[in-house]
Length: 82
Image (cartoon, rainbow, N blue to C red; front, top):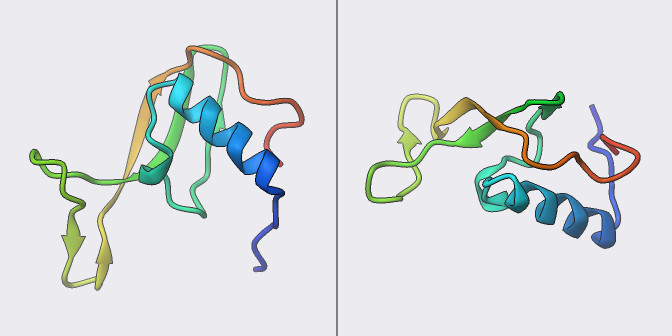
């Protein structure tokens, strides 16, 4: 499946929204599915060790991805999700 292309302006708006909700945009894989409701945001993120290092799965030969749910402090930019 082809990945949707978004403008730089849109990417920055989404990154700012993630940060407002306590999510580091660098921790969100480009193909993460983000589910938003009035009270929570659920999304895939790169797993981090206690020292902040990104965890790596040698068997899958890639980063460890975990599903996380956080409180929704502000609603996403207009025309969500794209």
